[in-house]
Length: 445
Ligand code: ATP
Image (tube, rainbow, N blue to C red; front, side):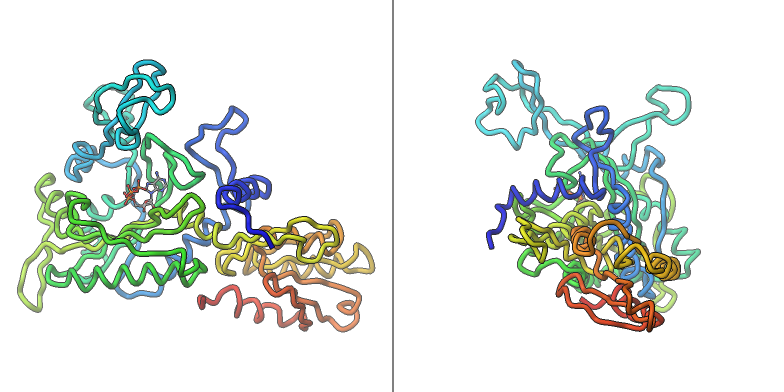
């Protein structure tokens, strides 16, 4: 069996995503934008499952975490305090001949990579999108689309602390959109100008930094593995001292082996008290915590695991994607695709397939479909040969295909086909809920 080359594999994944309604170019009928993507009918399910798995693990199953959902538009002073107005920039160069613009650190030897023309000296370019709040478009009304979700959690720290009655160590978790006017977007959904993040700000007593930093690096690593990333495709990379962002005491990236190379999936940073201290200074509000037991007042330190929902979704797709040369069963097939997504992430958990479109089978299958639909995203498909219908489900990662056949009409059993092994077992249809719950709801790897 020949493996596709990595770049061919990436192209094939992009085309599968388009063909099967996972991810489309945004505004495609106008030629697209090249820097943002839309999640289609199956893509939104997959992405929602990625977010739900994260939320379940880090909010629902913990006693020391609460969630929140901050607004995208924040007071402009937030971005002065956070340092984004001042330093969230990439140095840019323009070509004097062809007028193209590049990141200075991505062009070698001072010549335009496109036409060889002369380049301007590097100038800073702020990555934040600017807009205006209210009808007046003047500098007094400038606001920014947030470039990260993190600041909402720092700014609301005191309100969350008081309303939830938590005490350090405890965390706030948030999932939401972020916007960056990236100079070089690309590699599909890896780097886009509008994307989604899942971030945790974990507030701790100052002397517990190292232990919680190590804890979160390990916990986030484990989460990706538990949902199907291959251990050999995931590595940790600790930042060198010189590479650390100005606010960071230590950062470790989780890097994934994308088809275009090892790249950052998530960063875990020890931010010290930098953020709370700055917001305290800029807002004039007291953001300290008073520990009743030790009678000590302090500014909590923060460990931040900050990941991208789109990058995570792409990594899960990449590691799930398999091309089977010669097909999985269809005679004469050249290549068939199976998306071996973790059942928790699969957009559709099961498909109901009547073997033939007669003898009461469609009605029976549809009735089971309606019942399972109460709990899961399920599909009903009666079109084409059974083999073709299996292939269609394999391609989008549906873990189970439930077939209603003539025996069902006699004894009320159905066959359940497993996507990965292609084995079928026969079950009383009354046991389907129990069967599926044990498989698609379980969080075991
Ligand atoms: P990079 O070096 O790739 O630009 P970063 O270090 O600037 O990333 P962070 O600011 O640490 O990224 O953001 C946290 C996470 O948000 C990243 O690990 C990534 O998963 C996601 N992310 C950041 N920028 C983008 C983007 N333009 N498109 C998609 N996801 C992004």
